[in-house]
Amino acid sequence: MAGAVVGSAAGDALGAPFEFGPAGVFSARFPDGAGLLCGGAAWEGTAVFHELLRVALTGEDPLTAVPRTLDEVHPDHRPRWATALAPGRHPALATEFNGAVWPCLATALWALRTTDTFTSALTAAVDVGGDTDTVAAVTGGLAGAVYGVDAVPDRWTTLLHVPLPGYGDRVLRTPELLGLAARLDSEAPQNYT
Image 1 (cartoon, rainbow, N blue to C red):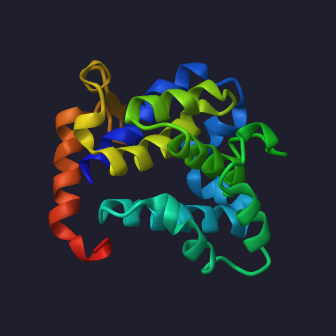
Image 2 (cartoon, one colour):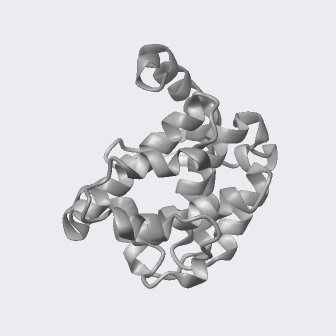
């Protein structure tokens, strides 16, 4: 859990300076609004991501879980998801901006498939360009769940800070994120075992 929480935050922080499109800014700040704009596919994308994250947290390979996860997707969307998340599919083949739900998750899985460390997965995701903070946050969450929190470089976690809009000056740093992950782990283990 700690790897997923810290990995996602590190990915978002590392990708943000490289982002050039306003769509990702909106999605990151107003996820409910983005979901309403994107329709059911956005909610399915979240469900697919969460299932792959759950699989990784149990120690299984999330990449091998993609086909069985897609069996649960609405039949009307299943072919599109299967194409976007297919092994060997490169982000350059995307027909939409990678801040959209299909190519965002597809890029994260591509980065996980084509690399062998947390750092290389996150770097590959950011190097694709586009909506880098969103793509890197998704990639960081999955890669963190796969490789664990110790795989996130100290040079990234020492600078990590996550402001909480609506909570004044409250900022979560790595120790608070680790505490959050520990609480999530202890309070709801049945959710991913």
